Image (tube, rainbow, N blue to C red; front, side, top):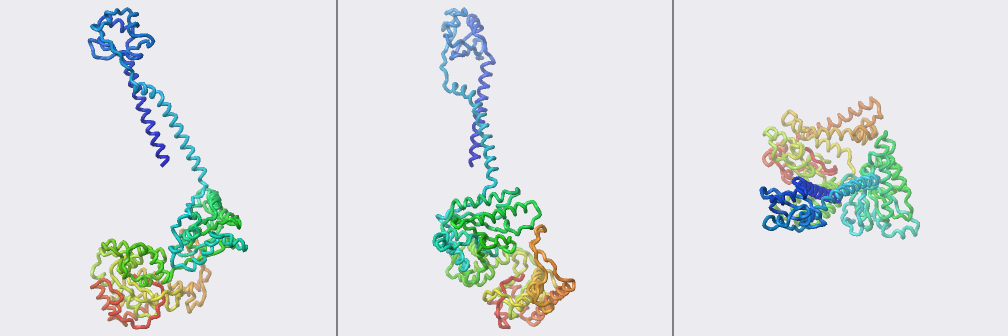
Length: 620
């Protein structure tokens, strides 16, 4: 804004200077084009050719009788015009009122100002241009000097916008960080006992679990300044800039102590050293080294705590995690059903929600959701209610918002011919029938053949309660459920389609994980095969390094193939066994396009006792 105002002033000065110079030039041309000497004027007066003389301070305007053209002349301002003309031989009779009209013209103050300005303004314009160029050069110099300054944003702790009341579903994490708040509020209580509060706290959790929100809540509870910066803002193209910014950041924090320094996505600068081969990686490693030095440089009486967040703790440099730097690691896990209900209560505050909305039912329907997912869910429900011209958000909007978050928006305009629609109906009915017939599988909640996202149809199923562990039987049930759609196509149409491509990909991945990561193969035993390593330069996050022989590789392939084939055989058997129920569900889908849980279980009551247990899934 400042530079814009400066440019505006410069343009105004330039415009005024140009106008003044043009005006002065016109006056000069007008003055010099028809100018006659005073002695020639005297001759014309004696000859009787002059009609009117208009006298100014130093100039004369002459109008001749035979022409209306105005000519000019100069006079000596030290003596009157009449005396000058008489000295040149003009008689008083020639200057009488009958022969010639002589007028005295008073000088205009505006013309005097313009005349002066026409001389002064060009110089002012040049001075202004030099001043503007100097200021621009000085600004560029300041920008160059501030290149190594920290880009951290400081938030005052006087009026906190986020406190622990705004963070739900992570009670254990809040208890861990309560000590940090107490230290920032009453540091002397700890120092008197010789206690040393952790200098650094590392927040670890999946994306969307609320790491940044938790750091702001700590600042809000303690009422101290909060410096926020991303790890990527330290790293620049030029070597040494990141280290300079780290130094400047900690100097600012010490000046405002007690304070909190929050570094989001610290893995951008804190990756394991030695992975780079020059270039920007040298700059990153120098930045990391400076960060380590600054964290060691804290005194016991310096009330500055650094909080960092990452979802990749496995790639951080070990020097960052040693005692004395990031002493404490606080894990923000995915919330359980109670936590999800508390997060829902936080996000519906201030929103017109209908009293009949069952938050417990919504929380039960969203296993695996993190805080960001739930915030998006509530926002989608509000948008749906507004689109339907409702004054409050009701339960159906929340249920549909869950489906939008999981599978994407409905694609009702997608045209599908009757044959493909029938295939999709049997495909989704096959998923639902197999899920309902397996003891370890989840509970079917909805079946639909309305397209959402890239899926032609979808089946939603989730467990009655959250589980942390997954048994072998539950994983196999998951695989069988995923293959239910392909099995239904095979049994009903004696043909298969490309609709199960995503199902097959997920089944193969599950089987490979069972064999190579979880030791759930009878043929290969309880062993882990292959090492997953990060490839820095290949654009992929993880790559598997083989640590087994070709003979073992063949056995791994054989075990994976057997698991998938056995699951498919079981899925086909279930579809054949419950073919009557399959036809009823598929026909109902062709009529209504969507079947709710109550309608599904009315058509096909659960034939086995369920023990629930695998995480929520959507099968397309």
